[in-house]
Length: 206
Image (cartoon, rainbow, N blue to C red; front, top):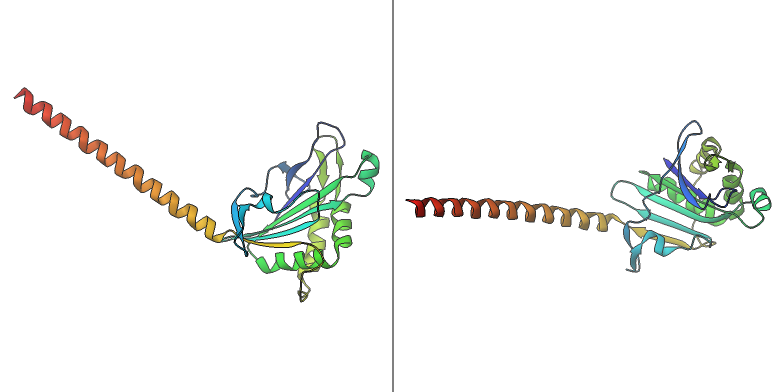
């Protein structure tokens, strides 16, 4: 499972950004695929980022062709907010081939917002080099305990938006294939025209 965290550092230049949290406390500045065009169940279209406000509590679950993404936003930080002098927010994104596991995390978040807020906050701390650092192991342990449990009947406490990007990905593939075919046809046509012009010039010479 890929894990991304978005928050800010202590210094003014360390503004909010996404970090991909790797193993052994390594991390790199990288955006999760939030800019894919998607369509929700009601038919509303837009980018994943169009469906939530990073300052408002939201849960977004988008289903892809091979992987799905779960984004949970506006998890308030405790101690870091006091140090910073104003509220600090954490957002987290999980990407996995197993949508069922992401549903379980979304379910837990919607029914116990305070718990996931506290667990993510516990795993994040300020860092001079990157602005913030994340203990992936703490998050993984929390997620493993969630995955072991069953889903609840509904996800009603927090706004949950289900998005389906599978159709959009297929459309992009079809469009990409059409563009490639068009390029090949143009190339073939260009070669054919060039051959005709060369042949015509040779005929004139004769």
